[in-house]
Image 1 (cartoon, one colour):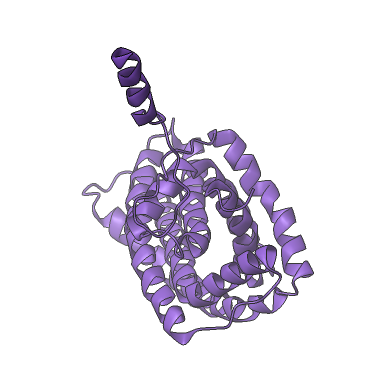
Image 2 (tube, rainbow, N blue to C red):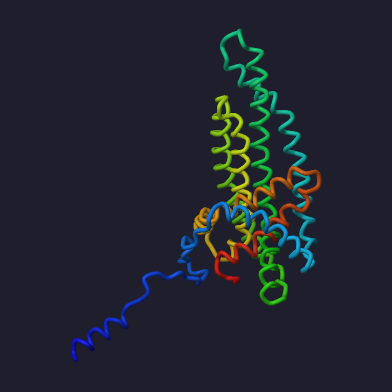
Length: 282
């Protein structure tokens, strides 16, 4: 009898071997418990834009395109001018490192192309991250409105204090991502000097930039629940979705007018999916 009581007592003490916490804001979220297949996430990141269009239209949120559009237009013009002027200077500096006369002209042409690619890649990285940082107060506000309207049908009042917090966090994340993007892009450009790897370098650089663009778009939702370190882990675990989201975002930037609405649309596409992956929305 005593043995049976002991066994029953021990069985009541046993706990499940695995728990997935959905409690947010405590700093102890189990954000690594979700392991989405990369290709599935990539496809979801692309197809989510259709839902983003429906959300912006249904809740009449297209007005959020105004400020990011103005920021994108101004920065895009300035960075394009800088890339146009400095590409030859970079090419000339690279060719000056060649100490011989033979092959100088060929090297100069290659160096000019390499310089244009380097300035173009660096310019796109800086442009993208500055836009993501400066627009963070408005895009975080947009993401929060989407979340609340999906849940309650009500909008969220604008808070200047929270907007400042969002701006500070956006700048912090953008600085981190700029350094990493420039580092990886530079390594890939160096790898591109080897002829056998050249055809793949442009695709690889694009995917790197798409990942960090998707990171920024996802963080407009994550910032309400996670610290920066936790957001980094979350995006890594959902890198396929980040790349998919960032791919369409970058393609819109390359169009004539797409940059005017690329950021709000990418935010609207990312918000429901991020919430779903955080177990907030079924």
